[in-house]
Amino acid sequence: MSEIPGDLKFLRSHEWARIEDNGHITVGISDHAQAALGDLVYVELPEVGDQLQAGNGAAVVESVKAASDVYSPVSGTVVAVNEKLADAPETINGDAYGEGWLFVLKPSDRAEFDALLGPDDYAEMIESEEH
Amino acid sequence: MLNQTILNATHRAQGARMVDFGGWDMPLNYGSQLDEHHVVRRDAGMFDVSHMTIVDVRGARVREFLRHLLANNVDKLKTSGKALYSCMLNETGGVIDDLIVYFIDESFFRVVVNASTRDKDLDWIARQGSRFGVTLTERRDYAMIAVQGPTARSRVHGLLSADGSERAGKLGKFVGAEIDGMFVARTGYTGEDGYEIMVPELDAVTFWSRLVGAGVKPCGLGARDTLRLEAGMNLYGQDMDETVSPWEAALAWTISLEPADRDFIGRAALVTQQSGGVAREMIGLVLDDKGVLRHGQRVLTDRGDGEILSGSFSPTLAKSIALARVPAGAVAGTLAVDIRGKALPVRAVKFPFVRDGKPCAGI
Picture 1 (cartoon, rainbow over the protein chains, first blue to last red):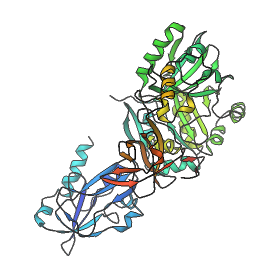
Picture 2 (cartoon, each protein chain N blue to C red):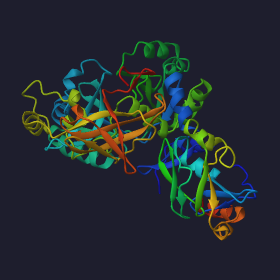
Picture 3 (cartoon, chains in turn brown, green):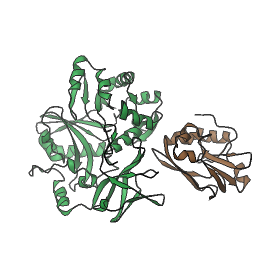
Picture 4 (cartoon, rainbow over the protein chains, first blue to last red):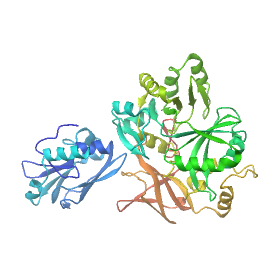
């Protein structure tokens, strides 16, 4: 299990969010989530311009084993999606917190981000799930 | 409490991701299911299938009993070691289980049934067998390792005695033999050549390690599932069950209606279904678009809805394939699958989808 970067925040459903210098928020799934799903073979992303609500389905990641909904950690407007994943979904398996990002949002309410789980709380949560 | 095979600790030591598979704690993968799939198509991989149920059936009337019990005809088995795939049906023609039966001698046949159906199968076989005076012995003293792939046989041969290696090399497809204290059968569930090897439990960990040393890669049940789906092989409980007849499960080739006087269980129902025509049929599907066909998705046809039975991403074809049950005749019309509310067009194809490492024609 790779180290969880300290600048990330999490949903209990294993999505991560990172606030960028321009205030936009990048979203992906955790390393724990990619490991549980196994080899990813398909990713369905939102479209640029879509309005997302915090906690609602925003994307789908499919491994050989299963399809899994990805929920948006915060509300906002999609400003970028990771087009490279269409041909290389396995990027998420290799680098969930980096090159495997899913989409970027312009958030409508910064407070939603602040309320997400911190990296230590998330690490503790997955630890307790495993025991 | 989950059942464990004798290889459980070995799997864990080798880094397997374990999963509850029908009450058994089994390896799903050892890292990458895709890598494991490809190694079986290109080289050699192995699976712990010790959870499967081996039953020795003995008695003076054992052949007569199996002629009655099974929809395929054990009279096709004439030489010792020869195997036959068959369905075991109930009186209404529904599939209780699918199995492999080996002919050893006229008083001894060996049957291998699914793990998930063990209890009901043993009950049914014992009940049907009582009036034939057969005895059943479950062989929990055997572990079973499936070694599969284009180089699988030669890698196994290197671990056998000189005599054993020579005898294994001469085994025809779907034939097994007692070799070096193991039962080595040239069978499998991947569409590749290879062996399924019944090995005494006490020797299983050592034999597994020797296979690793011979270059055979441990593979989990995840890869086993994508391999068998590509090979167009049914999975009991997903592709057929007691509510489905073999006619509706693309298993007509396993039904032996000749000779007409062989009175097997389910025969009358099958004959009636055949003359009346069955309402549903099983077909193969390919999704050329991006997306993954999954069990339970709705298949939209001109004749009404069908459903995806086994569906997955096919690692060999790099697109999704499935077995589906649809209304009879629907295959001639347009077909689509409802994936999260979107109707994606799919193509009906003949299966197997992949054989001996290569995509089949038309896929």
